[in-house]
Amino acid sequence: MSSQDAAFIPAHDCEDPIATDAHARFIRQLYHVERDSLEYQLTSHLRLHAIYWAVISLYCLDLLDSPTQIILPRQQVIDEVLLCRDHTQGGFGAAPGHDAHIVPTLHAIQILQIYNALDDALPSAEQDRVVSYICSLQDPADGAIKGDIWGEKEMRLNYAATQALVLLQRSHTLDIPAVRAWVAQCRNIDGGYGGVPQGESHGAHCFTALGTLTMITLLDNNAHPRATPTGLSHTEQYATAAWLSQRQTPSGGLNGRPQKLEDVCYSWWVIAALAMTGRNNVSWIDGHALTHFILAAQDTQDGGFADRPGDEPDINHTCFALAGLGLLGKHKIRSVDPRFCMPKEVITRLGHEHVH
Image 1: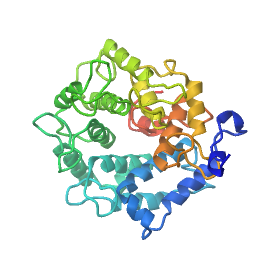
Image 2 (image 1 turned 180 degrees about the vertical axis):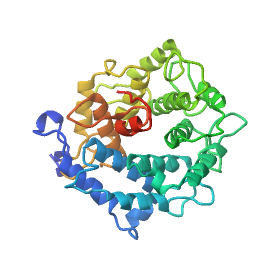
Image 3 (image 1 turned 180 degrees about the horizontal axis):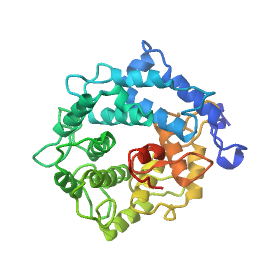
Image 4 (image 1 turned 135 degrees about the vertical axis):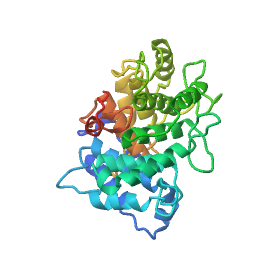
């Protein structure tokens, strides 16, 4: 057995299946990489994303507020988030000096809300500027929300924009019926959702579609009462849940679409999407087999989780492996709200009942 293979130990071979200390070291090392290093420059386009993934990972491990292990210095993180602000456009870029984009804008707001620092970090007028930036990205021609001024469109961008508005809790000018109509165009006959109209059904797009529908229901205070939190009918939700339940492979892992390899990140996308359809007891998949697959992708020596056993760990898959385990209720991992991928206490503080 190679040294690389030895680091990936199946759950049943581990006395303590979660290598918490190794994950803490892994996250600390990634965050504190030297700014003038090649590693930092090559990954700067993901900097704010990675900080969010690290924050969620530490929350799941119950280390975010640990008085004995300060892995992400709170004020340092907040200051770095603010350095990513694009003052010209009003949103946030992925790193200092980067153009604003809706995804890092969401992550900036998520991080500030998790640290309960939004109002201190962004005065009321600046929060209004962020809202104006988000609403300016909606295309009046079809209702979709663009990623940036260059016009990229995809389901995740609608999700990022609508969640950001929910977290900001401010008045907005978003055309909600138009967003709902665009999402409906992305629904396929198999019950899944594509990233764009007529796109292939995909597990992550199902999550962002259901998430978008959930967010706009929360945003639309004048909406008529709907049968479900997503606004879909029970029959539609059942069809989506059925498609999602077919994503489990013989390995126990989940894939994003038929005939594709399993990937740890779908342990979050698919399980969280199932939760949004009301299938929150994961009885539609084999939770034990999925847990075994996730833990087999854990590097118990150097920390982190990979996309699948034997591959190199990264912070993205570490975040969604831990978030997935939390939704599965495994190994004392703290669970996050499946609609937001945010701590439940934060969602409760904002006045929304969390979903299990």
